Amino acid sequence: MPVGLSLATIVRLAEALGVSTDYLLIDDAPRRPFRSPEDALCDQLATITELSDTDRAMLLSFLDALVTRTRLKHLTADIS
Image (cartoon, rainbow, N blue to C red; front, side, top):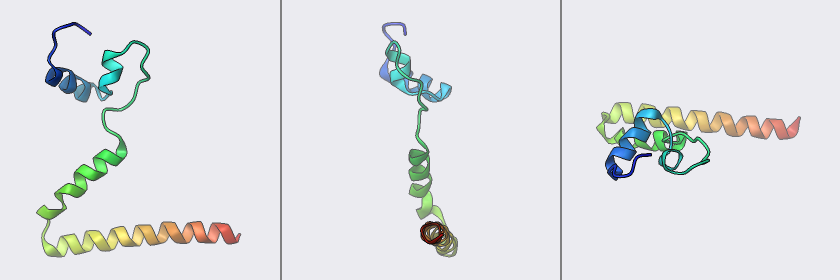
């Protein structure tokens, strides 16, 4: 990495390439994604306030259903 790049430039470059900044800056650093899936989910959930009350309620119901389904799968797997 050339010396003299600003931190903002390095971050933008990492984001554009989809890699972590340490991958760009450190020799032999493992290649990792710029953002983890958890970060992307948090970013999306932060925008939930932009939804209408009805859409927000539907989204929360859907999330509840997914969590319940996952928990039931784990419970039934333990029984088998």
